[in-house]
Image (cartoon, rainbow, N blue to C red; front, side, top):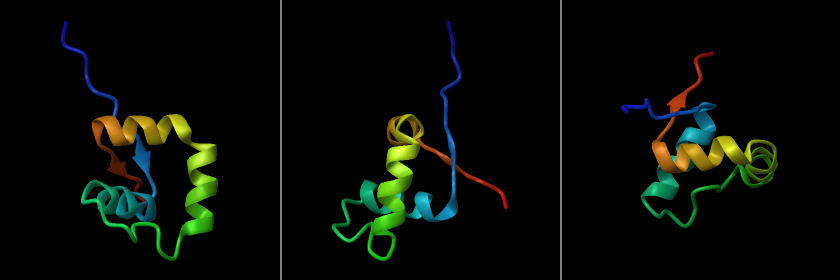
Length: 60
């Protein structure tokens, strides 16, 4: 059974943070700390799958 992996769409600024986290950058959330905390709380499941399976950037 071949299931397609769920890759959530995230805003561009979230994608930048996730990419920095992947590279283990200690300043990944610099400048977005408050927004990041709110986004993580609101979209915890989306964040889980983005970290696990990758992500795509939302088109504006």
